[in-house]
Image 1 (tube, rainbow, N blue to C red):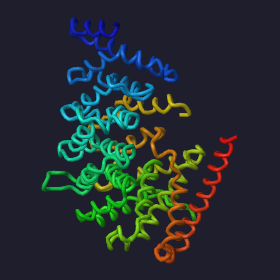
Image 2: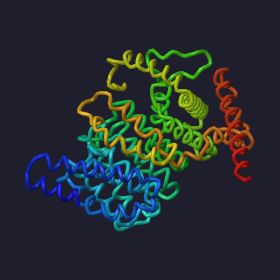
Image 3: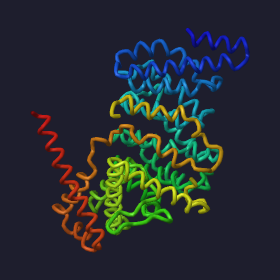
Image 4: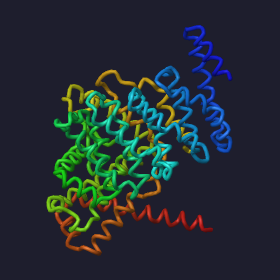
Length: 451
């Protein structure tokens, strides 16, 4: 009632006082939602009271409160015991807004879209009227192939593809080629379709993770699609080029993994490693000859991603070490200034995770007006968000994959490992040892749970 009164005052007075009061009301509602996050049974009642507000305010005429309403939608799609069909009626509204006027809000809208797909997967997949999959595809086409869309506004699109492929694994085969080619064409550009090539390295890395997600989804089909379009070699050449690039001043300790410039997020390292491991596990008959010849590089890529992921995990467990690395990163940024356009310019409880998600809605300084340092800020937004990959131990997958190849295809295993140098062998051995430690931890935890 207070919100509607403030909204009426705004219309009557035609000044900013009513608008500010309305924003305050919506923020108060979000605060209440967060405070009862441990009481999910209360959310259906809150939803019923807020639904008229959300339906009315998710429009182009209400941009003054759009972020606050998106925050409400994010809470309701995350904390409610399930996403109601009433809430699903907002999905088409969000997609229509993205297509027509709200692309600047894509990073904000990504949060509820992710919630819809991850928590209401079967509704997302099975609904034909409205067709949520088709709506999502239209948004992705706009974001990735419209030359008028700035890269900073298109960056959530690869994340959205990853969400679909991870949560709908084996259920969106008819869309797989379109997802892959949307990323490939934006990565390399397609002049015939007026699709610009990706410029910033952070955006390139996000597009590459679409290929990693596709390999994780179905490695054999992904290889066939890339081969069909003549993109196998270009994609993997660019992928590994991005992986092995280091900052100008990166110091490498003896025996320590090099500090990478790209793929800084542990989640991106993990999906890249898993995608490459699924590729590595393919039988020879499922691979074109040009790919068979590069399997050693695929193994080394997966090993490198996992070694880097272990470093990131150690830094997270040791904040002092992470702070030292941040100081080095500041120096690296200074050193990297002036590079060409190919370089970057710049819960314990569930409530904690969601607060981390929603913080991006409140932090509107992440709206970018130029080509400056948008990418590193964007990368840091969702580090603590749970994903469907969390239960998968990538180190154990690595060990199981190599052991399976060794047992079932000794010649392939020999070809993969016999020419590794000492440092490469050491890195592989360390990951195998780590996998055994992780396997022992899992067995101990399972035994403790059984008792």
